[in-house]
Length: 486
Image 1: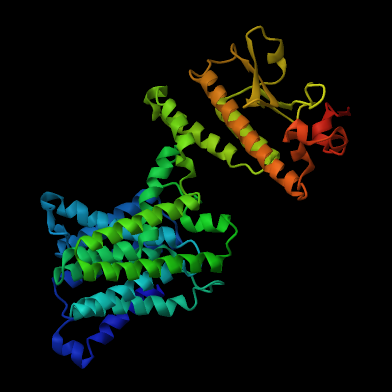
Image 2: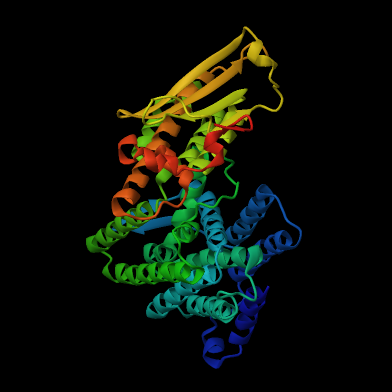
Protein backbone atom coordinates (compact mmCIF):
# COMPACT_ATOMS: atom_id res chain seq x y z
CA UNK A 1 0.00 0.00 0.00
CA UNK A 2 2.81 2.43 0.91
CA UNK A 3 4.63 1.93 -2.40
CA UNK A 4 1.46 2.22 -4.48
CA UNK A 5 0.22 5.42 -2.84
CA UNK A 6 3.71 6.97 -2.83
CA UNK A 7 4.08 6.30 -6.56
CA UNK A 8 0.75 7.97 -7.36
CA UNK A 9 1.56 10.89 -5.06
CA UNK A 10 4.91 11.50 -6.74
CA UNK A 11 3.25 11.45 -10.17
CA UNK A 12 0.68 14.02 -9.03
CA UNK A 13 3.30 16.31 -7.48
CA UNK A 14 5.54 16.03 -10.54
CA UNK A 15 2.92 17.73 -12.67
CA UNK A 16 3.30 20.88 -10.55
CA UNK A 17 7.01 21.27 -11.33
CA UNK A 18 7.59 24.00 -13.97
CA UNK A 19 9.99 22.05 -16.14
CA UNK A 20 7.76 19.02 -16.04
CA UNK A 21 4.61 20.99 -16.75
CA UNK A 22 6.12 22.95 -19.62
CA UNK A 23 7.41 19.84 -21.38
CA UNK A 24 4.04 18.16 -20.90
CA UNK A 25 5.69 14.91 -19.91
CA UNK A 26 2.92 14.21 -17.42
CA UNK A 27 0.03 14.58 -19.82
CA UNK A 28 -2.69 12.08 -18.93
CA UNK A 29 -3.02 10.48 -22.33
CA UNK A 30 -4.75 7.18 -23.11
CA UNK A 31 -1.66 5.04 -22.53
CA UNK A 32 -1.00 6.42 -19.06
CA UNK A 33 -4.64 6.10 -18.00
CA UNK A 34 -4.84 2.46 -19.09
CA UNK A 35 -1.43 1.81 -17.56
CA UNK A 36 -2.56 3.12 -14.18
CA UNK A 37 -5.83 1.19 -14.45
CA UNK A 38 -3.92 -2.04 -15.00
CA UNK A 39 -1.73 -1.18 -12.03
CA UNK A 40 -4.81 -0.79 -9.84
CA UNK A 41 -6.05 -4.23 -10.94
CA UNK A 42 -2.74 -5.93 -10.12
CA UNK A 43 -2.38 -4.06 -6.85
CA UNK A 44 -5.96 -4.94 -5.94
CA UNK A 45 -5.62 -8.70 -6.42
CA UNK A 46 -2.36 -8.60 -4.49
CA UNK A 47 -4.00 -6.73 -1.62
CA UNK A 48 -6.91 -9.18 -1.60
CA UNK A 49 -4.45 -12.08 -1.44
CA UNK A 50 -2.60 -10.42 1.44
CA UNK A 51 -5.81 -9.98 3.41
CA UNK A 52 -7.95 -12.98 2.48
CA UNK A 53 -5.81 -15.31 0.41
CA UNK A 54 -6.46 -16.36 -3.16
CA UNK A 55 -5.81 -19.31 -5.46
CA UNK A 56 -2.83 -19.15 -7.79
CA UNK A 57 -4.99 -19.42 -10.91
CA UNK A 58 -7.18 -16.51 -9.81
CA UNK A 59 -4.13 -14.33 -9.24
CA UNK A 60 -2.77 -15.29 -12.64
CA UNK A 61 -6.03 -14.30 -14.32
CA UNK A 62 -5.92 -10.87 -12.70
CA UNK A 63 -2.30 -10.46 -13.72
CA UNK A 64 -3.31 -11.22 -17.30
CA UNK A 65 -6.16 -8.72 -16.98
CA UNK A 66 -3.75 -6.02 -15.82
CA UNK A 67 -1.42 -6.68 -18.73
CA UNK A 68 -4.37 -6.70 -21.13
CA UNK A 69 -5.50 -3.26 -19.93
CA UNK A 70 -2.05 -1.87 -20.61
CA UNK A 71 -2.08 -3.47 -24.05
CA UNK A 72 -5.48 -1.96 -24.86
CA UNK A 73 -4.02 1.42 -23.95
CA UNK A 74 -1.34 1.06 -26.61
CA UNK A 75 1.47 -0.21 -24.40
CA UNK A 76 2.71 -3.14 -26.46
CA UNK A 77 5.77 -5.04 -27.65
CA UNK A 78 5.20 -5.28 -31.38
CA UNK A 79 8.78 -5.99 -32.40
CA UNK A 80 12.24 -6.68 -31.03
CA UNK A 81 15.48 -5.43 -32.53
CA UNK A 82 18.97 -6.71 -31.75
CA UNK A 83 22.14 -6.50 -33.79
CA UNK A 84 20.34 -5.25 -36.87
CA UNK A 85 17.80 -8.07 -36.80
CA UNK A 86 14.15 -7.15 -36.34
CA UNK A 87 11.51 -9.62 -35.19
CA UNK A 88 7.92 -8.56 -35.90
CA UNK A 89 5.44 -10.26 -33.54
CA UNK A 90 2.30 -9.50 -35.55
CA UNK A 91 -0.63 -11.50 -34.13
CA UNK A 92 1.56 -12.52 -31.19
CA UNK A 93 1.92 -8.93 -30.01
CA UNK A 94 -0.81 -9.25 -27.37
CA UNK A 95 0.40 -12.60 -25.92
CA UNK A 96 4.02 -11.40 -25.87
CA UNK A 97 3.06 -8.15 -24.14
CA UNK A 98 0.91 -9.88 -21.53
CA UNK A 99 3.62 -12.49 -20.91
CA UNK A 100 6.10 -9.64 -20.34
CA UNK A 101 3.86 -8.18 -17.62
CA UNK A 102 3.17 -11.55 -15.97
CA UNK A 103 6.88 -12.44 -16.03
CA UNK A 104 7.95 -9.32 -14.17
CA UNK A 105 5.11 -9.45 -11.66
CA UNK A 106 5.95 -13.00 -10.67
CA UNK A 107 9.69 -12.30 -10.72
CA UNK A 108 9.35 -9.57 -8.10
CA UNK A 109 6.89 -11.67 -6.11
CA UNK A 110 9.16 -14.73 -6.01
CA UNK A 111 12.23 -12.75 -5.02
CA UNK A 112 10.33 -11.16 -2.12
CA UNK A 113 11.46 -13.92 0.23
CA UNK A 114 14.00 -12.05 2.36
CA UNK A 115 13.75 -8.68 4.07
CA UNK A 116 14.75 -5.91 1.68
CA UNK A 117 15.63 -8.17 -1.24
CA UNK A 118 12.84 -7.34 -3.70
CA UNK A 119 12.92 -3.64 -2.90
CA UNK A 120 16.67 -3.39 -3.39
CA UNK A 121 16.61 -5.17 -6.74
CA UNK A 122 13.68 -3.11 -8.03
CA UNK A 123 15.22 0.18 -6.90
CA UNK A 124 18.52 -0.73 -8.60
CA UNK A 125 16.69 -1.51 -11.82
CA UNK A 126 14.66 1.69 -11.51
CA UNK A 127 17.71 3.90 -10.99
CA UNK A 128 19.40 2.26 -13.97
CA UNK A 129 16.37 2.98 -16.13
CA UNK A 130 16.33 6.61 -14.94
CA UNK A 131 19.92 6.99 -16.13
CA UNK A 132 19.16 5.41 -19.49
CA UNK A 133 16.04 7.54 -20.00
CA UNK A 134 17.90 10.74 -19.11
CA UNK A 135 20.72 9.90 -21.53
CA UNK A 136 18.11 9.38 -24.25
CA UNK A 137 16.42 12.69 -23.30
CA UNK A 138 13.24 10.75 -22.54
CA UNK A 139 11.98 12.81 -19.60
CA UNK A 140 8.57 11.15 -19.53
CA UNK A 141 10.03 7.68 -18.84
CA UNK A 142 12.63 9.20 -16.51
CA UNK A 143 9.91 10.76 -14.35
CA UNK A 144 7.97 7.49 -14.17
CA UNK A 145 11.01 5.49 -13.13
CA UNK A 146 12.07 8.21 -10.68
CA UNK A 147 8.67 8.01 -9.02
CA UNK A 148 8.93 4.23 -8.85
CA UNK A 149 12.50 4.10 -7.54
CA UNK A 150 11.84 6.88 -5.03
CA UNK A 151 8.77 5.17 -3.59
CA UNK A 152 10.70 1.92 -3.19
CA UNK A 153 13.72 3.59 -1.58
CA UNK A 154 11.48 5.28 0.97
CA UNK A 155 9.87 1.94 1.76
CA UNK A 156 13.21 0.11 1.80
CA UNK A 157 14.42 1.93 4.90
CA UNK A 158 11.84 0.07 6.98
CA UNK A 159 12.03 -3.18 5.04
CA UNK A 160 15.65 -4.06 5.79
CA UNK A 161 16.31 -6.90 8.19
CA UNK A 162 14.79 -6.86 10.75
CA UNK A 163 11.85 -5.49 8.78
CA UNK A 164 9.06 -3.52 10.42
CA UNK A 165 6.89 -3.34 7.29
CA UNK A 166 6.51 -5.84 4.47
CA UNK A 167 5.85 -5.58 0.76
CA UNK A 168 3.29 -8.36 0.39
CA UNK A 169 1.78 -9.49 -2.88
CA UNK A 170 0.17 -6.09 -3.41
CA UNK A 171 3.53 -4.33 -3.46
CA UNK A 172 5.41 -6.99 -5.43
CA UNK A 173 2.71 -7.30 -8.10
CA UNK A 174 2.53 -3.54 -8.58
CA UNK A 175 6.31 -3.13 -8.74
CA UNK A 176 6.66 -5.89 -11.31
CA UNK A 177 3.79 -4.45 -13.33
CA UNK A 178 5.26 -0.94 -13.18
CA UNK A 179 8.74 -2.00 -14.32
CA UNK A 180 7.29 -4.01 -17.19
CA UNK A 181 4.98 -1.22 -18.34
CA UNK A 182 7.34 1.73 -18.00
CA UNK A 183 10.10 -0.12 -19.85
CA UNK A 184 7.70 -0.62 -22.78
CA UNK A 185 6.69 3.05 -22.66
CA UNK A 186 10.37 3.97 -22.82
CA UNK A 187 10.92 1.70 -25.78
CA UNK A 188 8.55 3.83 -27.87
CA UNK A 189 10.93 6.80 -27.67
CA UNK A 190 14.19 4.84 -27.87
CA UNK A 191 15.64 1.72 -29.42
CA UNK A 192 13.52 -1.28 -28.53
CA UNK A 193 16.35 -3.65 -27.71
CA UNK A 194 18.14 -1.45 -25.11
CA UNK A 195 14.93 -0.36 -23.41
CA UNK A 196 13.72 -3.93 -22.97
CA UNK A 197 17.16 -5.38 -22.32
CA UNK A 198 17.91 -3.19 -19.29
CA UNK A 199 15.16 -4.50 -16.96
CA UNK A 200 15.84 -8.07 -18.09
CA UNK A 201 19.51 -7.80 -17.14
CA UNK A 202 18.96 -5.66 -14.06
CA UNK A 203 16.53 -8.22 -12.68
CA UNK A 204 18.43 -11.16 -14.12
CA UNK A 205 18.46 -13.18 -10.90
CA UNK A 206 14.69 -13.18 -10.21
CA UNK A 207 13.82 -13.40 -13.92
CA UNK A 208 16.07 -16.44 -14.32
CA UNK A 209 14.63 -17.97 -11.16
CA UNK A 210 11.06 -17.33 -12.32
CA UNK A 211 11.61 -18.99 -15.69
CA UNK A 212 13.22 -22.06 -14.12
CA UNK A 213 10.68 -22.51 -11.32
CA UNK A 214 7.96 -24.17 -13.45
CA UNK A 215 10.60 -26.32 -15.16
CA UNK A 216 11.93 -27.46 -11.79
CA UNK A 217 8.46 -28.27 -10.49
CA UNK A 218 7.49 -30.13 -13.64
CA UNK A 219 10.61 -32.31 -13.50
CA UNK A 220 9.93 -33.13 -9.85
CA UNK A 221 6.26 -33.93 -10.42
CA UNK A 222 4.93 -30.98 -8.47
CA UNK A 223 2.18 -28.56 -9.41
CA UNK A 224 3.44 -25.62 -11.45
CA UNK A 225 2.12 -23.09 -8.93
CA UNK A 226 3.09 -25.08 -5.84
CA UNK A 227 5.45 -23.00 -3.64
CA UNK A 228 8.83 -24.48 -2.83
CA UNK A 229 12.04 -23.52 -1.03
CA UNK A 230 14.43 -23.96 -3.95
CA UNK A 231 14.77 -20.34 -5.05
CA UNK A 232 18.21 -18.76 -5.15
CA UNK A 233 17.80 -16.81 -1.91
CA UNK A 234 16.66 -20.01 -0.19
CA UNK A 235 19.78 -21.75 -1.49
CA UNK A 236 21.98 -19.06 0.01
CA UNK A 237 20.22 -19.42 3.36
CA UNK A 238 20.66 -23.19 3.26
CA UNK A 239 24.38 -22.67 2.63
CA UNK A 240 24.60 -20.87 5.97
CA UNK A 241 24.27 -17.28 4.77
CA UNK A 242 22.57 -14.88 7.14
CA UNK A 243 19.66 -12.87 5.79
CA UNK A 244 21.78 -9.73 5.54
CA UNK A 245 24.63 -11.56 3.81
CA UNK A 246 22.31 -13.30 1.35
CA UNK A 247 20.57 -10.02 0.47
CA UNK A 248 23.91 -8.21 0.12
CA UNK A 249 25.21 -10.92 -2.20
CA UNK A 250 22.21 -10.65 -4.49
CA UNK A 251 22.43 -6.84 -4.33
CA UNK A 252 26.01 -7.08 -5.58
CA UNK A 253 25.01 -9.34 -8.45
CA UNK A 254 22.19 -6.96 -9.39
CA UNK A 255 24.46 -3.90 -9.39
CA UNK A 256 26.92 -5.77 -11.61
CA UNK A 257 24.14 -6.72 -14.03
CA UNK A 258 22.85 -3.14 -14.13
CA UNK A 259 26.33 -1.84 -14.96
CA UNK A 260 26.73 -4.51 -17.63
CA UNK A 261 23.36 -3.54 -19.10
CA UNK A 262 24.35 0.13 -19.42
CA UNK A 263 27.64 -0.85 -21.07
CA UNK A 264 25.81 -3.16 -23.45
CA UNK A 265 23.41 -0.39 -24.49
CA UNK A 266 26.25 1.97 -25.33
CA UNK A 267 28.10 -0.65 -27.40
CA UNK A 268 25.20 -1.82 -29.59
CA UNK A 269 27.34 -4.10 -31.76
CA UNK A 270 28.85 -7.57 -31.68
CA UNK A 271 30.66 -6.70 -28.45
CA UNK A 272 27.28 -6.29 -26.77
CA UNK A 273 26.38 -9.82 -27.79
CA UNK A 274 29.66 -11.13 -26.36
CA UNK A 275 28.97 -9.39 -23.05
CA UNK A 276 25.51 -10.95 -22.87
CA UNK A 277 26.96 -14.40 -23.61
CA UNK A 278 29.59 -13.90 -20.90
CA UNK A 279 26.94 -12.83 -18.39
CA UNK A 280 24.79 -15.85 -19.25
CA UNK A 281 27.76 -18.20 -18.82
CA UNK A 282 28.62 -16.59 -15.49
CA UNK A 283 25.03 -16.88 -14.30
CA UNK A 284 24.88 -20.57 -15.18
CA UNK A 285 28.18 -21.20 -13.40
CA UNK A 286 26.98 -19.34 -10.30
CA UNK A 287 23.68 -21.16 -9.96
CA UNK A 288 25.38 -24.52 -10.49
CA UNK A 289 27.84 -23.66 -7.72
CA UNK A 290 24.83 -22.92 -5.53
CA UNK A 291 23.52 -26.41 -6.24
CA UNK A 292 20.55 -24.84 -7.98
CA UNK A 293 20.57 -27.51 -10.69
CA UNK A 294 21.20 -30.48 -8.43
CA UNK A 295 17.94 -32.05 -9.52
CA UNK A 296 19.27 -31.89 -13.08
CA UNK A 297 22.78 -33.23 -12.42
CA UNK A 298 24.06 -35.44 -15.21
CA UNK A 299 23.86 -38.68 -13.23
CA UNK A 300 20.37 -38.08 -11.88
CA UNK A 301 19.08 -36.81 -15.19
CA UNK A 302 20.43 -39.85 -17.03
CA UNK A 303 18.63 -42.04 -14.51
CA UNK A 304 15.41 -40.16 -15.15
CA UNK A 305 15.85 -40.53 -18.91
CA UNK A 306 16.29 -44.30 -18.55
CA UNK A 307 12.85 -44.42 -16.94
CA UNK A 308 11.09 -42.64 -19.80
CA UNK A 309 9.70 -46.00 -20.86
CA UNK A 310 7.40 -45.92 -17.83
CA UNK A 311 4.23 -44.53 -19.34
CA UNK A 312 6.28 -42.41 -21.79
CA UNK A 313 8.52 -41.28 -18.95
CA UNK A 314 6.52 -38.17 -18.08
CA UNK A 315 3.79 -39.72 -15.95
CA UNK A 316 2.90 -37.94 -12.74
CA UNK A 317 3.55 -41.10 -10.69
CA UNK A 318 7.08 -41.44 -12.03
CA UNK A 319 7.89 -37.79 -11.44
CA UNK A 320 6.54 -37.90 -7.89
CA UNK A 321 8.67 -40.93 -7.11
CA UNK A 322 11.66 -39.10 -8.59
CA UNK A 323 10.92 -36.38 -6.04
CA UNK A 324 11.22 -38.96 -3.24
CA UNK A 325 14.57 -40.09 -4.67
CA UNK A 326 15.86 -36.52 -4.57
CA UNK A 327 14.69 -36.08 -0.97
CA UNK A 328 16.51 -39.28 0.08
CA UNK A 329 19.71 -38.16 -1.65
CA UNK A 330 19.54 -34.84 0.24
CA UNK A 331 19.46 -36.48 3.68
CA UNK A 332 22.23 -35.37 5.99
CA UNK A 333 22.39 -38.50 8.17
CA UNK A 334 20.96 -41.98 8.68
CA UNK A 335 17.94 -40.80 10.67
CA UNK A 336 16.89 -38.27 8.05
CA UNK A 337 17.51 -40.77 5.26
CA UNK A 338 15.27 -43.34 6.98
CA UNK A 339 12.49 -40.81 7.51
CA UNK A 340 12.48 -39.97 3.81
CA UNK A 341 12.80 -43.65 2.92
CA UNK A 342 9.60 -44.43 4.82
CA UNK A 343 7.87 -41.60 2.93
CA UNK A 344 8.87 -43.33 -0.29
CA UNK A 345 7.69 -46.70 1.06
CA UNK A 346 4.31 -45.21 1.96
CA UNK A 347 4.07 -43.68 -1.52
CA UNK A 348 4.76 -47.09 -3.11
CA UNK A 349 2.32 -48.87 -0.78
CA UNK A 350 4.99 -51.19 0.67
CA UNK A 351 3.67 -53.43 3.47
CA UNK A 352 6.91 -54.05 5.35
CA UNK A 353 10.38 -52.52 5.11
CA UNK A 354 13.47 -53.25 7.19
CA UNK A 355 16.95 -51.75 6.95
CA UNK A 356 19.92 -53.78 8.20
CA UNK A 357 23.63 -53.08 8.12
CA UNK A 358 26.41 -55.65 7.76
CA UNK A 359 28.91 -56.13 10.59
CA UNK A 360 32.58 -55.73 9.65
CA UNK A 361 33.92 -58.89 11.29
CA UNK A 362 31.48 -61.80 11.10
CA UNK A 363 29.65 -60.49 8.03
CA UNK A 364 26.40 -61.13 9.91
CA UNK A 365 23.34 -58.91 9.89
CA UNK A 366 22.93 -56.40 12.64
CA UNK A 367 19.59 -56.01 14.40
CA UNK A 368 17.39 -53.78 12.26
CA UNK A 369 18.34 -50.14 12.39
CA UNK A 370 14.84 -49.21 11.33
CA UNK A 371 11.61 -51.03 10.61
CA UNK A 372 8.49 -49.82 8.86
CA UNK A 373 5.08 -51.50 8.71
CA UNK A 374 2.10 -50.24 6.79
CA UNK A 375 -0.48 -49.31 9.48
CA UNK A 376 -3.32 -50.80 7.45
CA UNK A 377 -1.64 -54.15 6.93
CA UNK A 378 -1.16 -55.76 10.31
CA UNK A 379 1.07 -58.82 10.77
CA UNK A 380 -1.19 -61.43 9.22
CA UNK A 381 0.41 -60.94 5.81
CA UNK A 382 3.60 -62.64 6.99
CA UNK A 383 1.82 -66.02 6.95
CA UNK A 384 0.19 -65.47 3.59
CA UNK A 385 1.47 -67.69 0.79
CA UNK A 386 1.10 -64.80 -1.65
CA UNK A 387 3.61 -62.62 0.18
CA UNK A 388 6.56 -61.44 -1.92
CA UNK A 389 9.88 -61.62 -0.05
CA UNK A 390 12.67 -59.36 -1.30
CA UNK A 391 16.17 -58.86 0.05
CA UNK A 392 17.90 -56.03 -1.80
CA UNK A 393 21.66 -55.77 -1.17
CA UNK A 394 23.04 -52.29 -0.56
CA UNK A 395 26.42 -52.56 -2.29
CA UNK A 396 28.43 -50.05 -4.27
CA UNK A 397 31.79 -50.64 -6.00
CA UNK A 398 32.67 -53.54 -3.74
CA UNK A 399 31.54 -51.83 -0.52
CA UNK A 400 28.71 -53.70 1.22
CA UNK A 401 26.57 -51.62 3.56
CA UNK A 402 23.76 -54.08 4.32
CA UNK A 403 20.39 -54.76 2.75
CA UNK A 404 16.74 -53.82 2.57
CA UNK A 405 14.19 -56.48 3.49
CA UNK A 406 10.80 -55.99 1.85
CA UNK A 407 7.57 -57.96 2.30
CA UNK A 408 4.61 -57.28 0.04
CA UNK A 409 1.25 -59.06 0.13
CA UNK A 410 0.42 -59.66 -3.52
CA UNK A 411 -2.98 -61.10 -2.64
CA UNK A 412 -4.20 -58.16 -0.59
CA UNK A 413 -4.55 -55.75 -3.51
CA UNK A 414 -3.44 -55.33 -7.08
CA UNK A 415 0.29 -54.87 -7.40
CA UNK A 416 1.43 -51.55 -8.87
CA UNK A 417 2.60 -52.10 -12.41
CA UNK A 418 6.10 -50.73 -11.91
CA UNK A 419 6.64 -51.66 -8.25
CA UNK A 420 9.67 -53.92 -8.81
CA UNK A 421 11.34 -51.31 -10.98
CA UNK A 422 10.63 -48.67 -8.36
CA UNK A 423 12.15 -50.88 -5.67
CA UNK A 424 15.34 -51.26 -7.69
CA UNK A 425 15.42 -47.49 -8.15
CA UNK A 426 14.91 -47.13 -4.41
CA UNK A 427 17.80 -49.55 -3.72
CA UNK A 428 20.06 -47.60 -6.07
CA UNK A 429 19.20 -44.29 -4.39
CA UNK A 430 19.76 -45.60 -0.85
CA UNK A 431 23.05 -47.29 -1.82
CA UNK A 432 24.42 -44.11 -3.36
CA UNK A 433 23.32 -42.09 -0.34
CA UNK A 434 25.09 -44.53 2.00
CA UNK A 435 28.18 -44.24 -0.19
CA UNK A 436 28.03 -40.44 0.13
CA UNK A 437 27.68 -40.65 3.92
CA UNK A 438 30.46 -43.25 4.02
CA UNK A 439 32.81 -40.98 2.07
CA UNK A 440 31.91 -38.09 4.37
CA UNK A 441 32.81 -40.13 7.44
CA UNK A 442 36.12 -41.19 5.87
CA UNK A 443 37.06 -37.54 5.45
CA UNK A 444 36.19 -36.86 9.08
CA UNK A 445 38.22 -39.79 10.37
CA UNK A 446 41.26 -38.99 8.23
CA UNK A 447 41.19 -35.35 9.35
CA UNK A 448 40.81 -36.24 13.02
CA UNK A 449 37.54 -34.34 13.44
CA UNK A 450 34.93 -35.47 15.93
CA UNK A 451 32.08 -37.64 14.68
CA UNK A 452 28.87 -35.80 15.42
CA UNK A 453 26.56 -38.79 15.72
CA UNK A 454 27.69 -42.20 16.94
CA UNK A 455 24.90 -43.86 14.98
CA UNK A 456 26.58 -42.69 11.78
CA UNK A 457 29.62 -44.88 12.52
CA UNK A 458 27.61 -47.85 11.32
CA UNK A 459 28.09 -46.82 7.72
CA UNK A 460 31.87 -46.36 7.81
CA UNK A 461 33.86 -48.89 5.79
CA UNK A 462 34.96 -51.83 8.00
CA UNK A 463 38.68 -51.36 7.50
CA UNK A 464 38.57 -47.87 9.05
CA UNK A 465 37.27 -48.92 12.48
CA UNK A 466 38.71 -51.30 15.02
CA UNK A 467 36.43 -53.64 17.05
CA UNK A 468 36.99 -51.34 20.04
CA UNK A 469 35.52 -48.41 18.15
CA UNK A 470 32.47 -50.46 17.23
CA UNK A 471 31.95 -51.32 20.89
CA UNK A 472 31.77 -47.62 21.65
CA UNK A 473 28.60 -47.34 19.57
CA UNK A 474 25.89 -47.10 22.19
CA UNK A 475 22.95 -46.14 20.00
CA UNK A 476 20.06 -48.17 21.40
CA UNK A 477 18.26 -48.29 18.06
CA UNK A 478 21.20 -50.20 16.56
CA UNK A 479 21.44 -52.78 19.34
CA UNK A 480 17.87 -53.20 20.48
CA UNK A 481 15.33 -55.53 18.85
CA UNK A 482 11.83 -56.31 20.09
CA UNK A 483 12.55 -54.43 23.33
CA UNK A 484 15.52 -56.66 24.32
CA UNK A 485 19.15 -55.61 24.38
CA UNK A 486 21.48 -57.89 22.45
